[in-house]
Length: 324
Image 1 (spheres, rainbow, N blue to C red):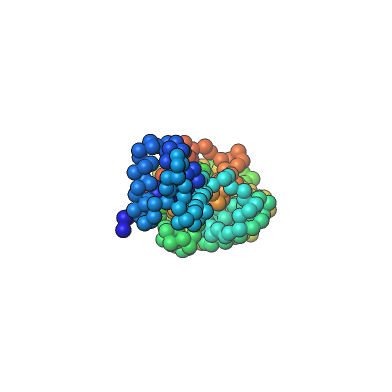
Image 2 (cartoon, rainbow, N blue to C red):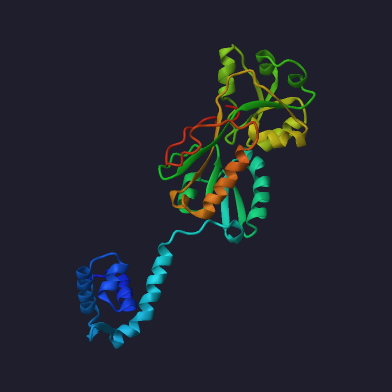
């Protein structure tokens, strides 16, 4: 038995529909001799002459008549399968997406993303999970669809796309001297500081920059996430660092005030990551577009030339720990 050649189905469909070697060759944009050779091969494969001469014409055999509709259906299915999908209509989506997000990003992203998804794709369910699970492994294994935040994993299979570059600001209650008075390096160093670190680390870039001025600061406590830090600062007497863009929606409702930290600090690179198998998926592409739109809207966003880069690459660890 000859090896399977799916092109034979297309040729057989043309032959059985036209009952002509010449017309079938024209339809498939090949020569009549080439189509004659294909018909001879089909006869060998199927063990039937398929088309036989009757006067000046070719007529189908009973076996050819049996095959005609089935072959036509198979070819139509193949064409449908290989035709590019139409543009996605989000309102028809019925699926779930799992989003792994850092706490700072989650506070800024969750409410507007939920509102956008409910308006555009009511059949979509979002599952937000904390960034305490293995990011690269979860993306690779399909447990997470997209990761958003400050990314530090280096799995070469992961696609990383830069979204925005945020900056560090200080946060304090309205009555704090760093809000009511002039902010100097000395005044900032002398405040009672709260550090944000999931691993309890108190030192970081802020301490390195203060050391250049011959200063140190007193970190009275460390907390694992931004929201906890802001709630503690609201009680008064403490200051903490926060990403300017990603904390903007929290400060007002909490009654907190921002101030510029009088030190040059590294920026906070916020990005998205996903597994390459989802790059061309229309639903996944739609979700990534929503996330990017929500995170980059507003005057505080800084443009970046790498924003369109979706090639698998390693992401540098920039601004990973708030306290340093």
